[in-house]
Length: 597
Image (cartoon, rainbow, N blue to C red):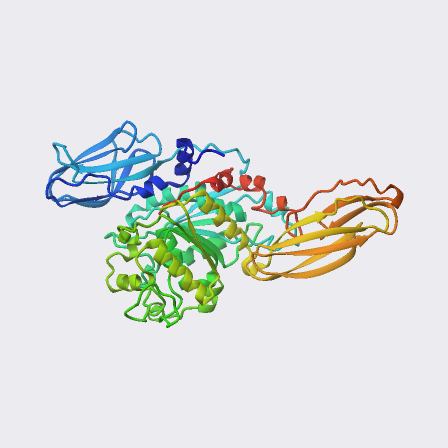
């Protein structure tokens, strides 16, 4: 395995996703403390680029200054110097560079006096520059990526990207009896670029990279499913956040627009040789993870499984705090308005919170254990709640201040107390980033919950007796069934000899658990026999007379697939299948991936 600290590997990861641990850590100010009293501020965040330009999120200066954009490391190459007048203020401005950024790297923006000498303010971030992928050729010519333009008549005012996997092999390879063989849930993500409505093109490029090279494509590959990235903006034109604020008319409801996109995508996929159910899988990180946290509370009946990272708090599934709710502090009120809880949901959308459906929705919440700063906890509080007055105060009273130790753990305790189907994991040594370990767990989570209500799926392994078999000896066979579904299911284990059923037993298996079934069989005469479990996993045994029982021939193979097919035949289980799905990207992304915040 490549050293995770190597610059080559870091560039591959950054190129695929447009964010890095270094870039996330670089959210802290990089400039020196100003040496004279000047009101100057600049924000510059991780982003993707073709190398010819960068976007400065915001800049304000009351004094005349130079804005220098340069390489934070190495040769400190300058890419652009801007002269700005006193009183200059802008947000989300694209800056064309004099010299192109050649590859993914850490870029600094410094605001300083024209004569130099010190920096009023500064920031640095990772700029991920598109480069050719160095992945193996999958030969997959049938997978495709389609831009679907906005269609107000269909209910969505923003475009979306639709990824369709190849069906040449997987559709035919699924055996009819395999659970969910013809069902492929849609994998849905939001545009990684946290842009405003006027920046549709930038969000398009970011979304394209996300679905082609990012984590969403890895999940789609794991599930052998189509994927959708909604290019809905997270901010209004004035720069204010509008992530499911539920304000305004239904036309402004981004949750309803996403549902309309999903229905449009399902219609477009209707002619494919598989079914796309109403329930879908969702994934997001940071602000996009928070989006799907809210969406799940609004429409739990439509979510099969959701993974979200980089946030300490979750929407609480009740209208008021009960005395037994394990809060971090002593809240001044028990009322939980949206989006702290669902207390005002009926007033906002005219519908009650569906607690039963929410409790049954499979959820995976993850965070880097270092995604907090005990000396400055407010820096790691999600922007959607900074300066939000009473809501912000209530969140602090319920969840505490530290992003991980207080908020994440309080969220975990509350959801465990209410019996939600939720898992919380904090990863040591990680900050506001996606690590390879996280990606592995994300993929495993979605694989386990692929079928949800559509039927159980078992991963089966079979252990055969390795001793010579003779007449009147007992052959032992052990079959283990791991339930990869989201609910308890019953596995039917069948032992066959030369195609004839000799024993059958059923065993109930809890989701994520494994149960073993042990068979014993005695042969009455010598000869060569084929012994099978569930008509799939087979071994050939030469049964000898007692006098020459010192030989036995093993010509079969060990099965590790579902009861109806081997693992290699199932989408998402074999390495070859994962590589074929999206041109080798799924395999690389298993190693190490970051994502947009």
